[in-house]
Image (cartoon, rainbow, N blue to C red; front, side, top):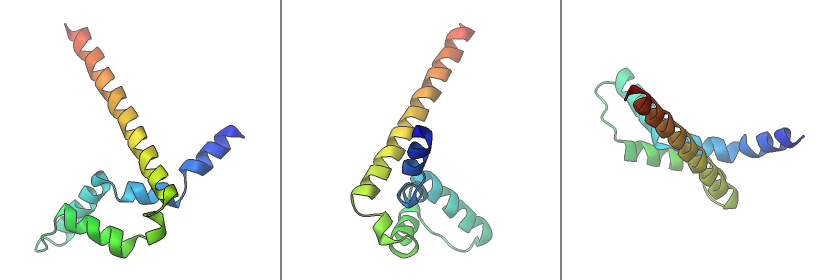
Length: 96
C-alpha cells in the first residue's frame, strides 16, 4: 500500500511536466528538430520557452505541486549523480 501511495505521488502530471521541461529532454528535442529539419536553428532557451508557454498546461508549471515535483526531480537527479560518482571512485580505486 505504501509503495502504491509513493508511485501515485511521483507519477503525476506535475512530475512528468518537470521532466519534460528538464534540460536533458529539451536538448534531445532540439537535436531531433535539427535532425529532421536541418535548416531550422533553434536554441535550448527558445525551445524551453516554447514548451513552457505553448505546449504544457500552465497548472503543471505553477503552484505548490509543481514546485514539489521539480524538487523531487532535482533530488532524484542528485541521487543518481552521487551514485555515479561513487561508482567511478570505486572503479578508479580498484585500478590502482
